[in-house]
Image (cartoon, rainbow, N blue to C red; front, side, top):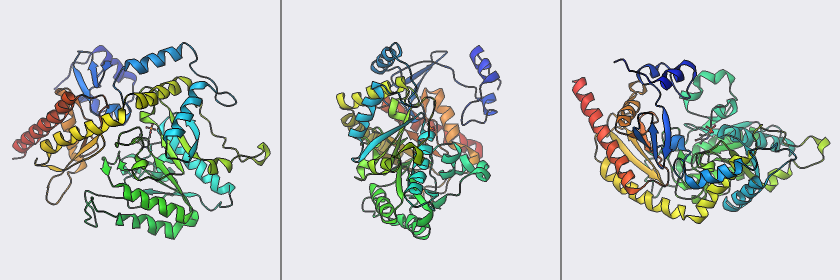
Length: 458
Ligand SMILES: *Cc1c(COP(=O)(O)O)cnc(C)c1O
């Protein structure tokens, strides 16, 4: 069926190359032009609205066009928008660094600013390598990462990523990463009960560390949820195991909290559920509540000190981005953290998480093709399977999740999937009524999709 495109859609397709898209798909499914946002809702040019159940790629925390954040941003814009950040500084960055180090796991006292998640990962990798080089361990130049890991899409970040969809093509360009099998609770090879699990699967990391620790500089991990892999969730004990292993083998522990930081998992940072301190913590996405690109890498005095010397020793960390420590972004992040403190956000997440879990368990647990509903904090995921008993997956070419997503859009719900996994990661300000709409519209869409598909297949 030929679509009638609006002027803006035509002009978009003439020049714009969209992220994470096969642009040919846009022939049948043109880009939706969003004119305004309010709370959890996005409004298109025909005033059709969509509930943003994925927080616009996991960045939004307090709703679109949030009055409090918008006001802070606007005031800052009329005072100072940006300044060079080498030799210069500004109050929003200083205050933000103070707040972050006070809220983060104890011991992370130093803050390095970058401007997006992937860049924060590059910073942590480079710092870890350079630290070891400058402290007498130059052989340490490989990173250990997990299967199904996602850490961003610049070349260094892709190298440690384990999702083939994103890095397969680029293999010839990538760093030589040590890969260990990560946790897989839905298809657990040890058949552990998550409630009493002691993370025997951490042995896969241990084996690699045993064999290669002399050349490994850091282990990098997404705490509690391997998000891009399909919201794969695992218990805190796994993090405790890895932390102990890293300390034992003198390998850094890099916590990539870019997706899970700022309350998503029910604690401000996911590492806090395991009560561990990483050597590096990377933050972005929710840091500015979905307003502006900004990222930070938090690290320890010990690591900082290995770079601190007379200029001539060339030990400095000479990494920079034009927009390092952007003033507007820092001011917005500061407002976001102040909201966490003043508006009882963690309690709200607890409460709404319980509400969402109850609704979702009721809606999805007995549905055909639903292998599992899982949730941590205010992140919920439905894993669709061909066969509930064997957990056999749908072939990715079938694009089951994608088709359900397209149908849900016609009902005013945005749930862009990850393969066969549909998930909910809504802004925290979502109301109970909106959560109910989100869950029930998803259920209805899945049901109708499989009914129609069944009728077609036979
Ligand atoms: C999104 C993400 C990144 C990359 O952040 P960008 O800002 O998209 O470069 C890195 N790690 C994790 C866990 C992420 O979810």
